[in-house]
Length: 169
Image (cartoon, rainbow, N blue to C red; front, side):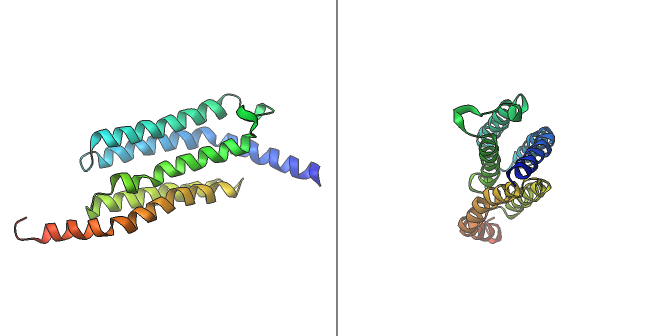
């Protein structure tokens, strides 16, 4: 029944938006903590640029969804709100996923911190059960780039380990 599915979608959107502000704020806090954890192990300007880009995505999401979101009939550009919301979820996930490519250094401790942090962030998205597609999009957008970075960085990790084990070090 079309009426029932519309009512279910409307309720899902209501639940989704009721959790929106805590999700955005917790992502902002997590990003700041993340940058703090890596501050001494990475280039501070790269860390800050990542943080600024990440926070810009969150601010855009807040502007789009925090003020009027689901109350408007149509979203900007003729898109529907769920498409924009999913795009925001994917962009946030990709920012977390990019951390492997940007910040893996070959130092096993710092690379492990990045991996555990991103995995924990992505698992936290499972709370979005009101729209089952959202955690899948977020988990994939977080973890696929991270996995790729882990595969690419394997050689760097071996080089770093051999440097630490060399007698000159």
